[in-house]
Amino acid sequence: MLRIVNTVIFPIIGYMNEISNLNRALETFCENHEMVNSFHHLSSIEQLDGLGSEYRSVAIIPSTFSIEQDGYTIDYIVVVMDKVRSGDATALVKAEEGNVFVLGQLMDYLASIDSDITIEGGSFASPPESNEDGYNIVASVGTLTNSFSRPLFRNFTF
Image (cartoon, rainbow, N blue to C red; front, side, top):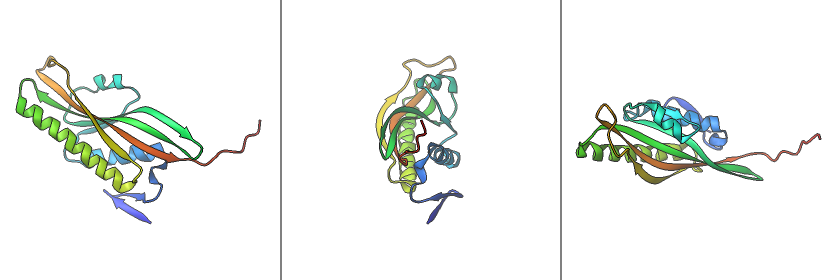
């Protein structure tokens, strides 16, 4: 059985059994969401600084994993960032609200594809002072968890 989501076809059961499929689903969401400008799959939190300051973007960063006989679970840090003018309290509140809104819709979108994916809220983060162009980056940070099944490997030849 297949489900069509934004013109990409996803098998309903076991779709998110590969990291590349999760990444593709995240890219699809970000490319098609009116409030998101870009998606980034990063290898470390330090890379967030190098993204520059663009309109709202989403980034995921692998955080922790656990391995069991029948599968593994990976936790990702998921960050939604937006650029706001320093000192504009209304813009700050709207950016925080928009970031949480996007995280909520991302959670709903991923759950519609695979019920094993969860996003839990976390924290707001913002640099204490504006950068040189008079803007701050406001970030909402959560945890995306996905469980992947794997077959038990028994074909050892050594």
